[in-house]
Length: 339
Image 1: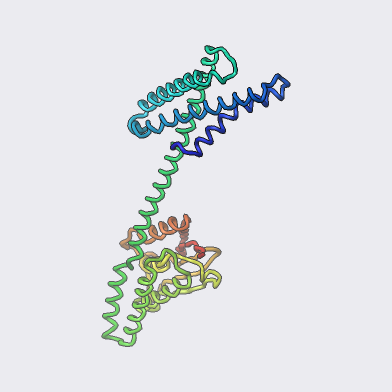
Image 2: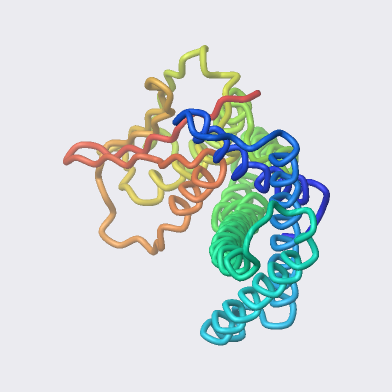
């Protein structure tokens, strides 16, 4: 807090309230009312006194915040603040009483000083409470904003790391598959290379995007699936049933790729027991579901699902939903509205 024109006007307005309130009470009860000249003098004295004491107390607190901030010791700050602000308020009220005595309504000096000192002490504690309350509220709000900013920056860094790479194991396996296809079937290896180029073109195109259209993600996943099918053949079957109404909505890039790759990685896929993967829309979500036939041992640390969850928390503060039964395993990811 700092002294400025707005604050001075606020102090002046506060100083006008007591005379107005007392005059209204006197009028309501039918008691004797001071003349307008006398009332004007009372109003002027009240405004001057309130502004002077308020400015003095706030100035002391501003100085204390620089010279003795709260972090250097709470007890020390409380003692200094209570002592210095009270002394300032009392000194100012005595000086003002003596200065304004000639224009003040006739009153016993000792009685006036006693009454005004009580008023000064009350004003001081009210001002201190309000000022420190505002200060701590601002500090709390700034701390909350900073904490949220650092949290989002941390998540953003993780997301950038995720978006800038496709699973190295996938690339390694794809290159091995391509190498074996070149000797056996040059036409098929050319198709495989085209699909691989499509996959990485998508990665490069959307690597700096946080959300992409569902249609673009589906186009990408179809190219990705072609690579998987050339490696696994009919041992893996895919089925899509996505509503046209959500194609122009959004989804974090490579979400479906991670979910499909997880399904293939964690489950047995054979000619006798093919793996069936479904991608379909339901309400405001996209669902990736596969029949459950887990491999006994799979090296996995769950990074893919955690990264998807963190992306949704960062973007829309929503959670993905994981459902599992004896027959199937599915992950539901929310659709993100695009502006």
